Length: 335
Ligand code: EPU
Image (tube, rainbow, N blue to C red; front, top):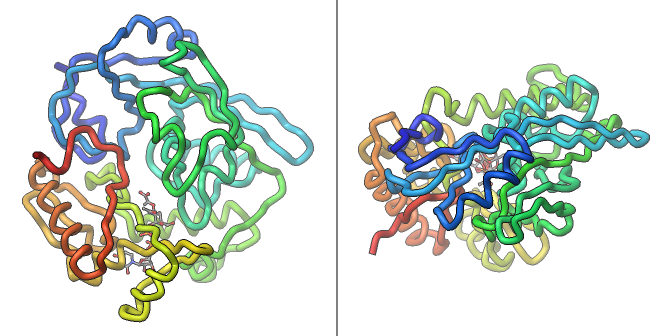
């Protein structure tokens, strides 16, 4: 077995029977049909994966494809990038070249290939706003296919790729960017941070700086403190349900969007006094209650216990169920 614990940012013990590095599309086309029916797991940056079973009796695929192809059309930039790039490196490279769009998504950990799977998002922008097309390996057809953004069924932390995790492997993502800035500074803390640092709200590079400062002040760096970012999704409920909750809890942050309203799960966990709560090596982060951290000694059962406590407390007080956000290998509830 190969020890892959260090390749996931939550650092739960993880061993796999085999590991296959995929460095090019040609490499994928040749080696995938040979896998047969062996269980597969795609592992990029490992920053959104919770490993609850320490041994995986299958093959871990590492898509390390690194292409970077640009097509310009007037002020539009179409950038096709390989799944193996670090997401944040691409954000920085595009901003340096004066190609705008990804500034609010600075400092998100992980690799490019994972970005469309869960439609990464932060500070009022989601990947879907800048994803033009993806190139995929289709395990069912044993062929490379392309899907336009409209075919990916993007939603809040959701896409068709998340719905059918065994069917596709992301090879490249084509981003649609622009040489014309389109600053989006409406999300809570951004405007304040720009002002505080005397930065320009019209300059996407300044917006990226503000976003990085906010993230660094609230979110633990996975390189120092094992975590997978937000551990739960913000629940989306009918707006009338949210209004009833808001009447009872006037400080509760809610984000209405027509008939549906998103509710800040971090606020609910914080309101319950769970910030800093610890079970063995796992804790609720003391600056962002939606993030759970591992001090390096945590095991899967401790995490299960902490998750169960958070979910049952939120359910008891607010009547809402929290869904785990990252991909999981193994189950939280063992029957
Ligand atoms: N809040 C608290 N206490 C907390 C945490 C949050 O009161 O401990 C309040 C905040 O003050 C704010 C509201 O809850 O009024 C929302 O908090 P925040 O802006 O920090 O965002 P979030 O909803 O907790 C989501 C994403 C993050 C993303 C931020 C910023 C999800 C699951 N998470 O978090 O994404 O960075 O918005 O856009 O949607 C990730 O997916 O891993 C991630 C970090």
